[in-house]
Image 1 (tube, rainbow, N blue to C red):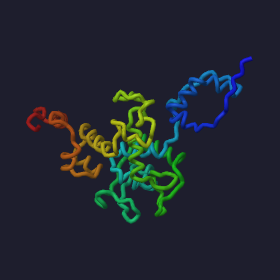
Image 2 (cartoon, rainbow, N blue to C red):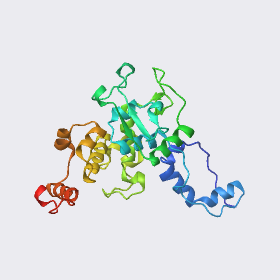
Image 3 (tube, rainbow, N blue to C red):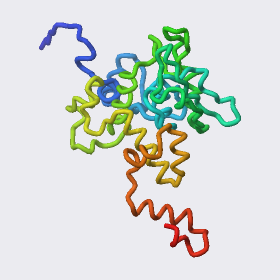
Image 4 (cartoon, rainbow, N blue to C red):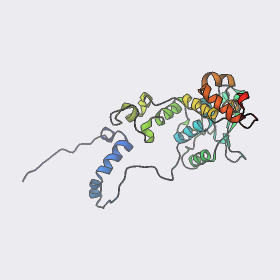
Length: 266
């Protein structure tokens, strides 16, 4: 009889599967028969993790929604309290407030205070988060931050980390545009190194892209200025990436109903 005796040793699971979704789930799917045998049950259909209809929004979800839905600066997002979310108003919105006495100033101080309308889809995410996942915490000033962790209000570095993490193409199911193997890429496997992905961005490009999207959609620059709390001059100098051709075509569309087709006005 051929005996094969080995020593059983304890291992740190992270040394075998560094990432649950990418490593452990894949291994489990490929070896589901071993699990079934160990449990003494037959598992007929096992699939890797995939999107489902219902989910509970996390702080990261809400942070991303706030930034992409409003174009608000990082400091404005961090300054939001639960009471600043007004889903019960006739027009659901977020209220941006300058509260330097409790360590949540905004860039332009009181002149930057404003209400920003948000969509029903954004409200659905925030409502789910408040109902299911928001930690029951206050900050050092007894305020209830909208974007919260177990330790209180999120820090600016935490918001940046969220954006670095979720702006990586591989995190949203897209192929790597840099020809990297996700299994070997340190930016894909180590959350602390997410910023090393060439595609990851800071929060500011989100704001810049949001403003550019509004301009390309034909929203008047004065409206964009009020919503995003940035002067038309700064928009023109730093945010507006439309070409001269784009601008001309948009003027033509706006003035197209004027007699003469608007050609003399562009």
